Amino acid sequence: MATKLEKLENSRVKLTVDIDADVLEQAMQEAYRRNVKRINIPGFRKGKAPRKIIELNYGPDVFLQDAVEILLPRLYEEAVEETQIRPVDQPDADLTEVERGKGATFTFTVDVYPELTLGNYKDLEVEREIVTITDADVENVLKQQQERSAQLVVSERTTVQEGDFCVIDFIGYVDGKPFSGGAGENQVLEIGSGRFIPGFEEQLIGFEVGQTSDINVTFPETYHAEELAGKDAVFSVTVKELKEKVVPELDDEFAKDISEFDTMEELRATIRKNLEDEATRRTNAAMENKLLERIAEDSEVEVPQSMVRHEAEHLYEMFIYNLAGQGIGEEMYLEMTGQSKEQLLENFLPQAETRIIHDLILEAIREKEGIEVSDEEIDDKITEYMEEYGDGDLDPATQERMREHYEKNRTGIANSLAREKTMKVIVDSARITEVEAAQDSEQSEVEEAEESAE
Image (tube, rainbow, N blue to C red; front, top):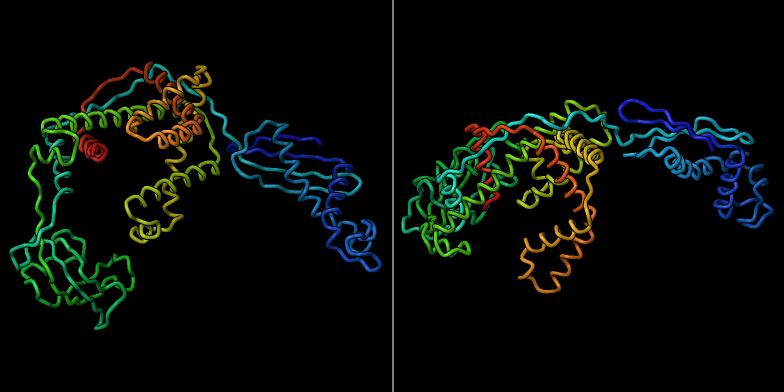
């Protein structure tokens, strides 16, 4: 077997494999052995007909296609091993020439792991934003906790007003006929939440408990159900009960109820620290991305589209998984946004390509700097993970399962540690200027940090 390697554009290669007549004949003989039991030839018991007799009846190339299918995976595997390429996708295979008694020529075209020409990665200038956590930021977190701890109690009032929670039955009509999804019983609706069709909640203000009346609305032109978009509708609504939201006082009792702390002062201090830690983590991550972008601008690499596609699919799956954690299914999200799966997947392509390039940069720097991770470092990280999840508070069986989980993922932990150490080389050599975060940027950071801190 002889293999020729040809480099194409966009990290793609073409392997041309020539085999001699003996290799082709061996594959033909193997194809005969695999198929002979299924072939009936008059004068021979089923499965006992000689190969030459079968070829006389069905043609000399009767086993050729099966022989090719036998050869393709074997030849490709051997060609990959011989040329030491690193494929990132399945190959496009083709039989370009075949002649019994002479041999055959196969070609395999495949995307391979891209080669990167690394640019400068030391002594780079970069800004790191400093986010200042204010008392208002801390209070926002407390208010959110306060809202989550609120309770709905039956109101002494009987007239609906803004901010009330109404328990309602309703049925909707378009052109005098009920429509699918237009009815509900014992639905709890916060007046002013904007959950229902525009105008619906506003018209409930002034209703009395027990009252049944009609509400007239118009579905938005952009309504997700096309058959209802822009249509006028009438809803017959009955207010069955009226509730008010009662929020707890922000006092020491509240702190004890929602946390491990005895006082609001301790709770506020912890919330502030969590917000500051999270803001620091995010601004450091943003700075690291800027550094990687600078290195990418000074580097050269061609990332194959199949590799980008695979990474985009991975990001998409993570996105859908996170949506499911919020109670939103894939179909529901696509319907809400009016997108197809393919359109949403396309949105992840730029991010996927950036992630791949950054990983290639870090891998190249790691190799150049000779960065390694010891077994002891992995053991220490596993211990850190165990302690983080309350190792001492878990029963022995749970502790053992957790440790087994981390032990199985030693390679992943090693890669994560190597990435941290490599990134540290870049950051430690950088010339960093600290700047106050812009107001809109700061607000965004704080809001995200608040989510995490909770």
